[in-house]
Length: 486
Image (cartoon, rainbow, N blue to C red; front, top):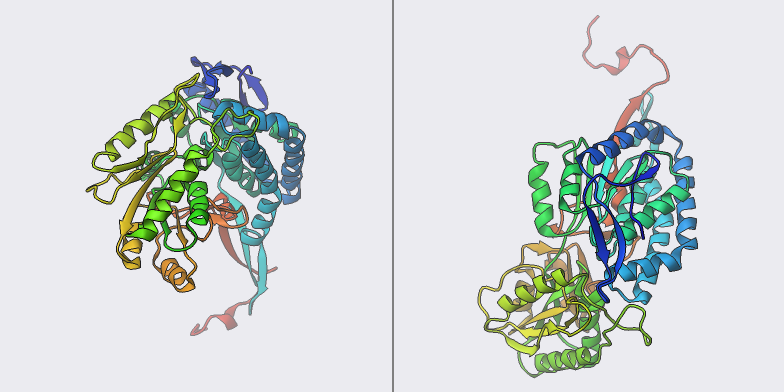
């Protein structure tokens, strides 16, 4: 696919260097274009600023019409779009089809969320009325991730458009084609010129965008990048930061059938080749035969997982990591973590047409001291054995992150205790840690976010509340002013 940027309703080449996105399963180039420069970024923000005046003042029904037509465009192109995401990310086609379905479902959910969370209400007062309204912030920069390159930026863009914000979107440099297709669908839906703009490129393009005068940064990505953005905008309190970051997520597997537990653990840790921010990275089990049985069942199930190209028949459970660079980084991290660990299943490369293929790993970390508290964005489970449930909860909370956490147990009392003491934004019981829903909040604490959850709560950070106390005419208010003397 020939790549372009999209500024003020016009497709054009970026002014920067040429780059490609690569199918990590085969090494084939699937998209090629030129990156956006600082001048391109300035043009995009200027266009968005100019478009904001009209877009923000339109009736909400007009904005709903645009995103509804966008949903129709997504539906019409769903199969081709899913295949494009699979080619760029290596994800199995069954999973990218689910991603396109989630993108379409987000439209109706966002319309409901806007009305419920950031709509208008009015109440009579003793003198006039009190009115609550919400206003958009202005120009929102959206930086997208590569793991869900359609669904996750879509989850920022749709609520922002409904609120009346205008958008400058930079996808991950790993998945520019997915970003271009998203904007093509919005163009097809009739988004006015300048309301949605697209910049392509790597870190320098993102930096150029954030050096412009923006009003919001809506970001999904790493905790390190999120920490940098906090520092960058520390002296710009008018810039709304909505940071959806990673996690070193715990899953306590305490009691139950080992094979059933293993299915939940594998789905929590290995789905999407471990490339979900909500994947379980740390597995906590009871010391003794019960814990042994769980680890053995997880290892046995991992051996049966089908790993293959995104369009293989039969369908694979997982594919490669997004790139050979991502695989090398994860393998290097795992080498450090494995020092002193008991390797139940090695996390290792698989020979293939690219260096992005890896085999899922399982390490017993019980005797390892000072394990780095970091997210390894790959299919690796690190397990700890503990003496009792209190120790399990302490171990679960022993992290600077706080995105997701889970408990597997048949005991409701343990669930109530864990729910009360856990420190995460998504806490699941007998379900994978990756379980989430568009009509619920999604976000984390600590290094996992900044208390601005997305999904259903994205409406909250796309607009700000305005309280008004109003009367229809000027009249004497002397009776309302206690203690006033003539």
